[in-house]
Structure formats: structure tokens, C-alpha cells
Length: 132
Image: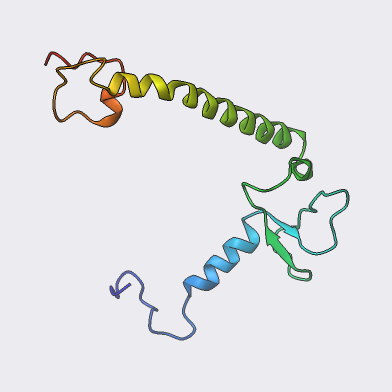
């Protein structure tokens, strides 16, 4: 920051550094697992907060296997499994509605559409022939 009142020690060598703060946040707050050959039955062992003796990596929110969630307990495992299922169901429901949205946005549904409507609004079943 260029404001001295906001960050008074910005020019000091021993002042706080953003990179050090983020490294602390990443190693203490975010969940990490032991990398390497510590996987047993494809379950990634969760590292303790602040682990510095062995090499660790961050858990990926997209590619972590469901069997690895058991390290946090049954509730977290059930939560993420149901979250993935709901996301898949909503995605397929959106695909089913895509054809309807295209029809409602077309001139086949409403030949005298108002100008200046957003794409999402014209894709709904709103009456666009009259201005309210």
C-alpha cells in the first residue's frame, strides 16, 4: 500500500510480509494431506495443522476422492457426497430446461418482443408483447 498510515512498516525489512502471512494461512488454516507414499487404500492422510516435518499438499476441492473425506468424520463425508449428487441433479435439470428457454426467447413464442430485455428475462415465460 502506498499509504503510510495504513501500513506503517512497509519500508522496513523486518516488517510483516504478505507472502509470509499467506504461507501461514495456507499451512495452518487450509486442509492439507501428506504427499508421497502415505496413501493407504487410496485414502489421503490428513496432515495436522502446521505440519512441517513431512511434505504436504492442499486438498483439491474438485478432485479429492470421496474415501478421503472419512478423515474428517462421517458427517463431512455425507455432506460432500450429497452436495455432489445435488450438483449433478441440478446440472441435468438445467439441461432439460435449456430447450424451453430457447423457445421462450425465440420469435416463435413472441413475435412482437420488447427491445432491451436481458437474455435471461426473455428466456423465461414472461409476456414480452406488452409493456406494463
